[in-house]
Length: 296
Image (cartoon, rainbow, N blue to C red; front, side, top):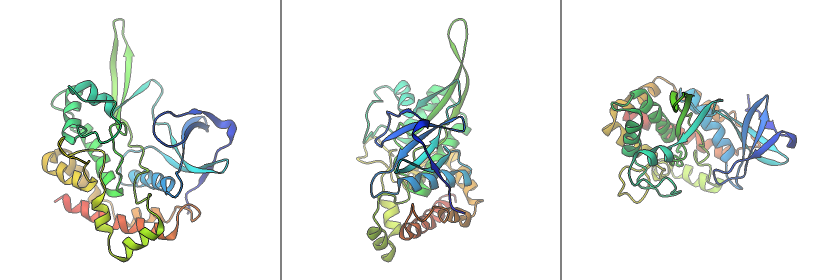
């Protein structure tokens, strides 16, 4: 069965979204707010976002709900609002900027201080030491998802905490905190490649090289010139923070690859070429066993 495609009428649009680089707008669907994101020309951002969301849920990683969508001929996807009434979304840059001296929360690209260690340290300072392992295991699961799908866009505004406060006579008192679902996965699964390049990679057995060449938004060390490859980040995490990463990888071991691959066949043919479909399956066929090897 193919994934459905939501048709958005103009009368359901409620406003624009300022964050990010792609044209976006909010709309209402069944009484709930959704964000439409138009895919850029010659990319598979729409199907990559949809597949990433469904793969995440299949491997028990909490992620924003996504559907394929269209609006007046504009092709893209729609993501359901995950911030509940009374909650505030605190992005990673706000967390790091508020807890770590000298952290530039306004820097948009190549932020070498956005390291795995800084994420752990800032979370510890904000939430108390020792840090609740469940929180970091959830964040680690997002990084494992990134490695599985090749997501290279986990910058410091693409993760965060959801905070609910209870107003007291003197001030606001934190009532509940939860990790925000994983979101913004369009930079994954080779969505930027043209079919000629995909065919070349497939014909030359170049999936491993391609999967190992991408650089993400989280750095290993603040002296590094580029963000870590998503798979290398998991290697580093297993070595330095095994209490966070090993449980996630062991959970992945319990989930067969075949149902994950089967999700790729649910993308409608009008949204994805057969070459792209074959490429995505080959990519997952490489990253999945590679990650399981890191669980040992």
